[in-house]
Every structure is written in structure tokens, then in C-alpha cells.
Length: 292
Image (cartoon, rainbow, N blue to C red; front, side, top):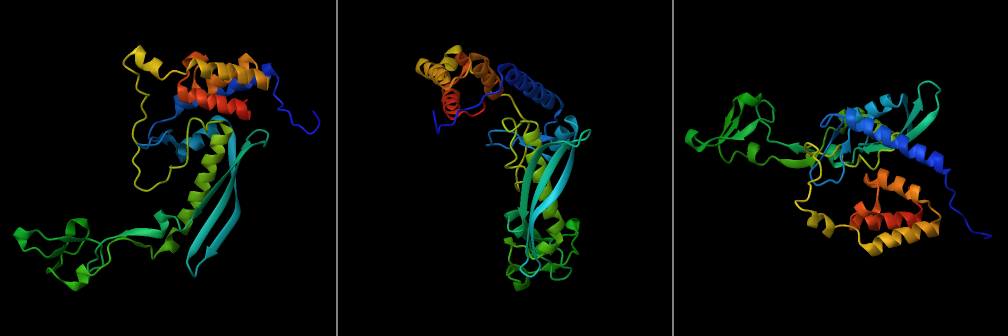
């Protein structure tokens, strides 16, 4: 029809080969990645977070070299404010062919750079080693030697101690972190490019790879329901499966293409194994032509 746009699909044989190649590489990644070193799992997040060593490993497995370019930067030493937008290009070492690229940005207004955790400083030596003295030893305040302090003692109510601002305060030494901010932007760009090169965005995320205070835990398999009845209660409904079939037919997708998509997206081979949530996602993807 004039003025309409049609979805162009790859040849079925080539499509299947591409899917198989992606699946094989994802299996290699899973077998070589080290939990807690190459990736980590933060409680409450849906996917493991890819870390810099993991991104470097992916690039090495694919035979890729990394190259960086500063796309945009702001260096205002008077405010101070520093921002870097970096582009990472991954190219084949042998033919210097561009495989993927990624962007990474970091700036000094991010909370991990803008603020610092201020502790009480010793008026005598300047170290942030002041602790509250125990009542049985007279109370007051002590510059704790075991933490590098000088051992000076101060009485309760001492204004030099108790009027200090503690906790989350503006960082007064951003200048010493400029190189760290630049390196963080480079790291984020590399992770972005590696995820794209390995087609691993469904496996890993990078959104929380450098959050402050996060604790990685060991990645564990999803819990298996205790009974077959529990599995069935969350299984895709018959109307959902009919909708998948009807939508696929309407969009001109083959049965094999849908089966390939089930494998790469959900790790299953039949719509009978879909959950209600997965079925809804698949119906939406088919309607939008995503992943096919």
C-alpha cells in the first residue's frame, strides 16, 4: 500500500543462525564470568550488574579493542564543576571493523562526588578520629589512637568538638576527584559498548554498577515452586496463547521465528512454558515488531 511501511525480516535461515550464535556466546559468557568479580547482584534488582572486569572480558572473548573519545566536557575550576561524556568504540583487532559503541557520562554533581561523610576532627591533630568517651572512664571525647589519632581528650560540651558539622556535607575537595570522574565516564562507556557487542542487555544491566553503599550478593537461581499446581497457577492462559498465535500470523512471523524469540528472550521453546507476565510481554513485542 502506498505510503505504508513494511517490516523487513531477515531470511529465516540467517535469522536462525544469528540467534544460535547469540545463544552460544551467552553460554560462553555465563561459563567464564566470575560472580562478584565480573558481575554482581544487588538485592532488589532484577538483573545482575556487569562490572568493568566483566566488560573487559567480553571484549577479549570477542577479539575487540577499545578506543575512547571525549564527546563533551565541562571543566569549571571556579564553581567547581566537572563533567565528561565519553564514547567507547569496540573494533575487531584483526580488521579494525567497528562492532559496537557506547556512551558514558559522569559529573561532579552526582551525590557520590558532591557529598562526603564528615566525621568529627580533632582540634589538636586534625584527624577525623574523634569518638565518644565511655562513661566509666569519665565520658567526654577522645581522639582515638587506634584509628590514627593523637590520643587527645576533650570534655563534654566542648564547642570545638560538638559544634562541628557531621554526616552528609558538601565535598570541599572536588578537585582531587577530577581524574576519578573521568575514569568513571570511561568505565560506563565501556560497559555500555560491551553489553551491545555481546547482545547481553537481557542478561546484565549497568544501571547500578557504581552506586554508593551497594552490597553484591551471590547470584542464585530462581526458586522452583514446590508443586506442579503452583506452576500452573502462573502459566499463560489459553486466550493469551491464542493471541500470540493470531498476532504472529497477522504480522507475518513464522513459527520458527517465534520459537527462536522464546529461546533468546525467556530461555524456553514453547508457549506452553510461558508465564502470564511473559505472555503479555511477548504479545506486546510481536505487536511492536521488537526482537524479530
